Image 1 (tube, rainbow, N blue to C red):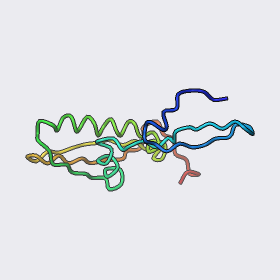
Image 2 (tube, one colour):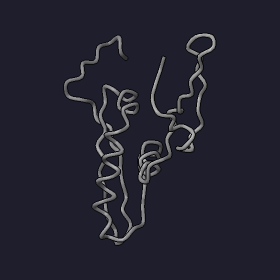
Image 3 (cartoon, rainbow, N blue to C red):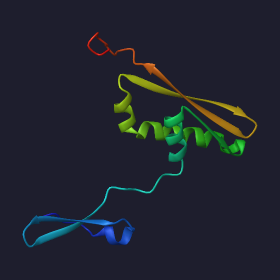
Image 4 (cartoon, helix red, strand yellow):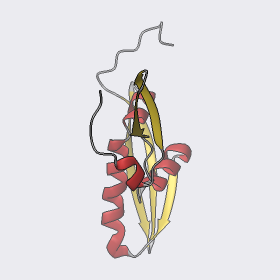
Length: 116
């Protein structure tokens, strides 16, 4: 039997009922999470290859660090683009911070004729 606190009801996430065996049901929280603050920037960057944000220049370093962190947290994207890897570059123009996503073939990747 699974045990633990019932945080599903208090966290605001919907719970999933799971029957382990007849007569014993338990509720588990779903794995959906609220979107993180900088995740929409990363999602647009993945989708379009370019994303721009307008913010105070004092915040540019923080935003840059957060978007790069989002890239490293996205394990599914890394697996999806293997044997390539991505590099996030940026440019600044006054208060506009523009991100670019560039794909490169990983140096240790071996591609054969069967892969093509």
